[in-house]
Amino acid sequence: MSLFNVYPLNPIAITKANGSRVWDDKGQEYLDMYGGHAVISIGHTHPHWVKRIEDQLHQIAFYSNSVIMPIQEELAKAINEISGKKDFQLFLCNSGAEANENALKLASFHTGRKKIIAFKKAFHGRTSLAVAATDNPSIIAPVNETDNIIFLPFNDIDALDACFKQNENNIAAVIIEGIQGVAGIHEASNAFLQAIRKNCDQFGAVYIADSVQCGYGRSGKFFAHDFAGVHADIYSMAKGMGNGFPVGAILIAPHIQAKFGMLGTTFGGNPLACAAALGVIEVMQKDHLIQNAQEQGDYLINALRNIKGVKTVRGKGLMIGFEMEEGLEDVRKVLLNDCKIFTGEAKPNVIRLLPSLAITKTDIDLFLKGLQQAIALLHQ
Ligand SMILES: Cc1ncc(COP(=O)(O)O)c(C=O)c1O
Image (cartoon, rainbow, N blue to C red; front, side, top):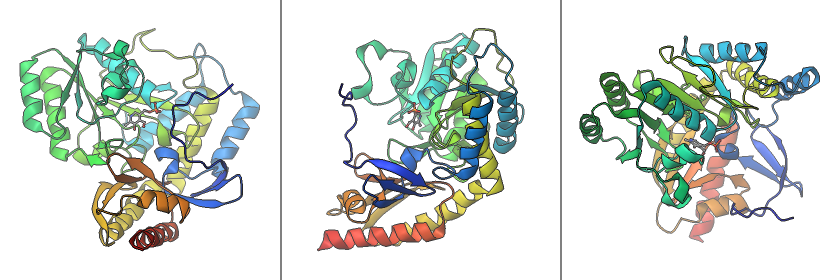
């Protein structure tokens, strides 16, 4: 049987990983500045995380959500503490799309409304509502088309205010990435996030902070939305949460009340996923990885701005996008093939850096050297 051919693949088979390094099946080493698409938060195969999962595997890997699972409560407490969202409630699921799907559904249940505001170039996942709120018609199947989503320009407060006024009390939720990832690293301005908060308060809508990519410490704060100094009503999380173990969740403000059967999942919150997620938080706290993301991110962003050939640099912490000057569009390919460095991409022509939050200055310097080498090779 063949694999369903939906991914344009690099012809590299990765078979081993450690920290910020991966190796292919021929033993070639690569520096991972892509973090498996922003997933690797504490570093590949971190020994504490491996042990946490291993120990749990010997206890119990799975039981359904029909019984009390103390490890879920332990995780809820740990997330409350590290995120600073003290009285928020936790619903566990398995992926980013599922987190957003549940967030949107919950907002609609809570308000009794149907309309959702999303933004140009947004990406929220591939399940039905999440993909409908994603601004990419090529991945929206006819069955996912709905006129319940209103797309507005990103960072445009006037358009947001006007839309709320026009739709009076019909808006269930606003969903927004704190830093748009797939779109090529574009930050929501603090003023814009504050305007979302204000409108949601005034019109009784739910502010959903999609933190699947920009959350979990990647920006240098636990949530990128925190830079604006206002709370959202629901935060969706996934990627960095399990460091590669599939786990997602939403954090739900205390005023949103649960009802039996409102949300549910078979696998979400299983003990193995909770152990992986706890392992991540323990390492993040012990090694001060959010602070590291901020410090190394500042260093990397500043260094990139001083490299000849780099046109623009955007982002916060270790969620960085940069564009190259004309003639250097192939730099990503050269970085991978010649310098053995993985980076991410976003169209058109944006290179995304989403390394482990534990990355060291030495590895960042190695990347910067590689980038300069790649630029020199393209100039030859
Ligand atoms: C901002 C954002 N939301 C949601 C998702 C979907 O997450 P998943 O692929 O885990 O379903 C992604 C994935 O890239 C994302 O970047």
